[in-house]
Length: 216
View 1 (tube, rainbow, N blue to C red):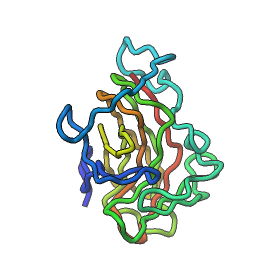
View 2 (cartoon, helix red, strand yellow):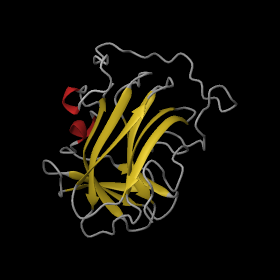
View 3 (cartoon, rainbow, N blue to C red):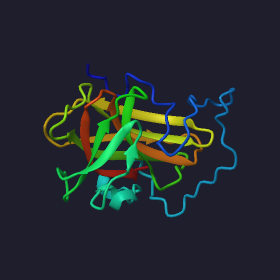
View 4 (tube, helix red, strand yellow):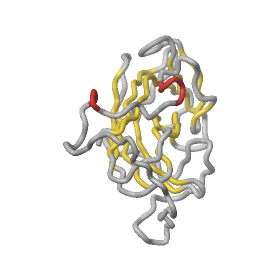
């Protein structure tokens, strides 16, 4: 079953990136009991791009904020694991010689992901865009529901997802570009990019050339 754009079969609000403790938290509201307010969050807008004309074109956007794994090219390797997934290097690449192969674990949750924190503190009022290239992994079953790309702001600890935007699309036998944008309207210390799908044993996909830019 194909998941409509900007929706998922499973809520993503309560999982961490694999290095942060899961707390089963729900997104914070604006002052309820969810404890969503974050105290003393410092946001540094130094060297921010000029946003007077609104969203920036791709060629004018700020630098790639996803600085891990050789700026998302994975030429020097991949994370040791993802969320409810096994992550390994694959030589079927979109650019260069390597990509990351993300394979579902048999159980533990209803989704499996590649999930990495972006090396920046999100700025309130800014808009961020994540780009990634995905395709089925060779000699493996592709996720039937497709692959989602997500941007999320959150705090940890305790883990609380603050703002999330995601889009799910089916994948075919070729490399396909995926893009998602998120407006940061609440103060948060962390921003991460997530690429994943619904858990089913034996399903895998590839991800390569991950980028995150501030575009406004």
